[in-house]
Length: 67
Image (tube, rainbow, N blue to C red; front, side, top):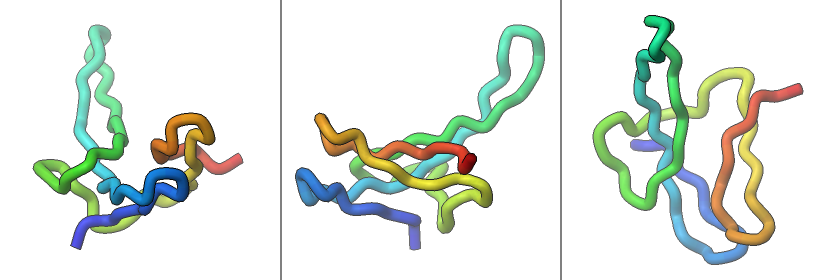
């Protein structure tokens, strides 16, 4: 089952995804993003060291590193 979060503002469900992106210098980084439907790259759990917040204006979920 994919990790999901429900927006407090809109009530819509978003699913957490990740993909590996290679930068111009050859460094590889993992990009995390939320999508309206679970697809390729959907994660089963939230990565360690991150927390979820929500954009107050749009209601879209955001993944941030814990401080």
